[in-house]
Image 1 (tube, helix red, strand yellow):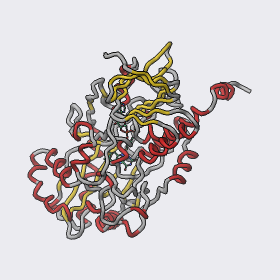
Image 2 (tube, rainbow, N blue to C red; image 1 turned 30 degrees about the vertical axis):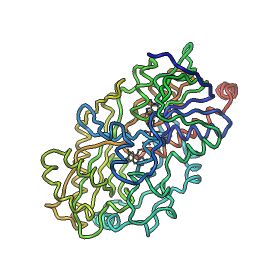
Image 3 (cartoon, rainbow, N blue to C red; image 1 turned 30 degrees about the horizontal axis):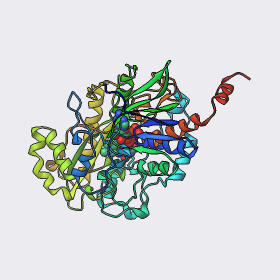
Image 4 (cartoon, helix red, strand yellow; image 1 turned 45 degrees about the vertical axis):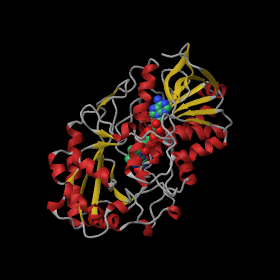
Length: 448
Ligand SMILES: Cc1cc2nc3c(=O)[nH]c(=O)nc-3n(C[C@H](O)[C@H](O)[C@H](O)COP(=O)(O)OP(=O)(O)OC[C@H]3O[C@@H](n4cnc5c(N)ncnc54)[C@H](O)[C@@H]3O)c2cc1C
């Protein structure tokens, strides 16, 4: 490897600027720490313009596939996946506290006060979302409005651009925390990819990274890896933690859709309403992807999908439901960021059941049986790649002392839920932990 050209000093260095990295950065910068955040992507501007802009923010222009062929969306931009996420907020599941003793109540309450997380007001519930919700309720589903990280006063009716980057600033993204962190002295190094953790006697002393100016060493007493479910494992593997990336969830999803007689789902806030069945591990919500992407996901479903392409010419009137399921932990992230994600029997069972229910709901909402189309399987939530209780302790410290993970990698079990509230709350908790002086931590652990 090339020798580093320069050395920078900080208190904390963070790899990745998504919700996990940005939250830790702002919380620690506010406490007076000198924080440097390395982000492999650029700071893409002019959000909400087009699908091509969206693909430009993705790794490999959006063309990232598992070895088995599941299409995985992997945003690489300042703010991470939150720039293009749907802004859906779901509280951490109770089992985190019951089984792992991780109580996030305080952090979640803090978060809900900081950002107005709430269901959309009536005027922002679009006609498609409303019709689908009514149909689902008529069929006995527990289908309701979902909490959103969206400020209603900034959100525009019929805009529907959340997933290509909110153009009005209504949707919260991790960029807000990045900007706040910068105001408190944090430095954001763009197009800077962390390669490995530097260690001395088993302790982290910084990271080696490559930025626009070449290789550099960023020395810091605390290293936080927040490069996302697929980005963090290779950094750890290169640092000698070879079990990182062994097993992960992806929360596979697909869509069932069909034309209606009124304005379609594309104009709505995605995931306005739905049924979140945490028991079954099946989430169903209204959601239509941008037209080019929707056509691609249909084509990706194979011959049948390609044959159904003409039906989405009526995409402006198309109702669409996303079915997302909790999968198992089969799979592996490799050093070159390639990955394997086999979908097991149980995962397909849930995908199929969800699709049947979605078909029934759409038909109740007025879509004709012959007009229903179904996409190929995709995924957008890779995580659980460096799990708490296995490679991480309860405070998310890795086998390398002073090196922590803080992103979706830490989630200890199969998931199946929108993860951002949990990741942000965990990051707040980590920042509190890191702010307690070492002596106080030892004293707290000693018996009275
Ligand atoms: C289309 C879509 C819709 C979604 N909708 C929702 C939703 O409605 N609600 C919800 O809760 N979640 C949603 N998610 C998931 C959510 O956005 C992510 O789970 C969340 O952003 C994860 O945060 P993170 O901190 O783990 O990492 P990420 O957001 O993945 O950020 C990781 C960052 O690290 C950078 N990086 C990678 N490797 C390196 C490296 N070696 N060095 C430096 N930087 C690196 C990447 O460029 C990236 O910016 C959605 C995701 C997608 C793709």
